[in-house]
Image (cartoon, rainbow, N blue to C red; front, side, top):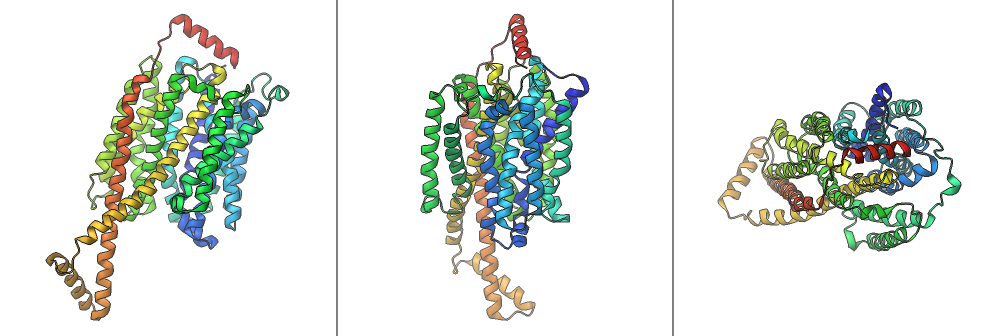
Length: 526
């Protein structure tokens, strides 16, 4: 049964804020790794487990949310997940060792992963079937804002406070959201009371944890451990392959699977997951590559980088509800998907042409293209995830779609890390090959640096060493700059290549009688 009045407003605020809070935590710690490693006395490579643990827990729990919500009752599961997330956030902020922090970060990811899909399902229930695109717009706004707000909020906290506050800010939001969910979200009749009739798919859950967990580990840690040169990565890659293949086969052969993969028989959902994967790929890769480019090459502070991302992304706040309203009137989502992917590809190629002396506001236009593209893409894809499914299969479709988005982001970041490293080596080699000591340009630059340092009182030997260091730093900066531009181009190619697949999406216009039957089915299910 859809919610009305104040209850609907509160449910919207609660679910969207919970989703934003969960997604913020996927990126907020990125700007604090240096401080955290220094505080805990560990290396940057070790502290990166804070990111890896959260991502692994997230991507394991998301596809299981449909089953767990059915077993425990969706409201109960949602509130429990909120409590787990909030408590884990507190202990993350109180951690005094790496092991302690990584443990609580994993638990936080378990609670947070459930918030994403369950929030979306609850939000959909608050709206009548014909108004679901509006719900999609509101939820899509959170999906885009979450990863973008992370670096901004994290940068501000790191500029003015200490890293534990990055986790502590979740506590008041979590407490308020838990109370609101308890009061305003309805408990379905019999919800969570039919545990005896639900057979727990232990084998499927174990295979999922093995396959997805190992895959996420390979994606998160592959670059740091030199991919297949590492025995750990090779072992995890084998377990990921065997686990996922076994999981897919097993879930398709049993009657009551933990993850209902049969919903992918629906063509709309199957092709929607492809678009969702590429969207997650672009969303998370852009949030990863742009901040590194801005800070490593352009000299922005973390907070300046966050503000640069945030301002144009606020366009999403305006666009999502508008697109949702338009789609609720029966406008086809296909043109939105096409133009959204074109806008995002345009953002990638525009960003790939910027000069290294740009200012913060020079990025407003390309990032506005990114915001427009994501606004147009996210909403139709969220809506298409449930189009053609029975109400009982909504949770499975939503969970799979959200898992695919997270995996797309993981693939994107792993690809960006690997591609930047490879392109950096190539560009550095090319640049160094042009720095021949006999060339007039190199000689003039080198002599100018040496003479300038000697004029400040530095002796010839020290000035010579420092001049080479300055030239080497300039070469490294230029090599990284060119590598990041190459990465933007590569992401743009992915968005262009999938556009023709919209031909496989179908939007069936329902008759008045079909709409009445669908509405009655949803009312009966809820």
